Length: 238
Image (cartoon, rainbow, N blue to C red; front, side, top):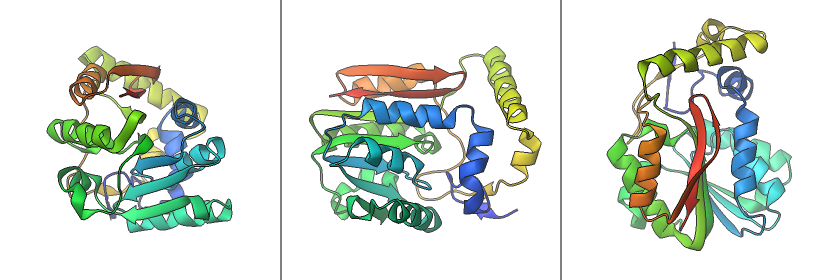
């Protein structure tokens, strides 16, 4: 099996868009929820871990005047996203930066990303950081937003009990079967996750822990607009 960065998931980038929809229930739905939570009038949006650009495209369709600054440490993901965004005609509204957002968290002055973002979004990326770094990242996001800025994240969460581990696993297995494939077949396309910068294999936190971290980081209102078994969209406003 091929080594991949955390978040790349599949050995072949071209497998990602189909494979992730088979692996994770309601993938498009939770991206849509993030998109709806970002004000359509947003001008500057920061995306952490843009992957193949699926969330980016949904954001740009909803926010016609937005500039999206996307940070990802995977050159192959950034290239895939850029090609897709260019094909959709949004290349003037998107800037991809190859960087580790964990490094940005600790050393923001190294990166010419700026601040005063109306919104920050992320999907399937932050759960690769350990909890201390998650909190630091949330604090750095808060420092980079405008006064009424918002942050929304879609990620798997840690089950609160062993019983829920089995419940969540069964839900994913049933979803894959509905999609005409098994988790074993999907797994055969996955790569071996290697540590990259501040990220490594899944380092999940409970939903409650995430909300406490957001509050501690300075978000005055925190919310969970969507949850489906072990997947959740959560975030808030300053």
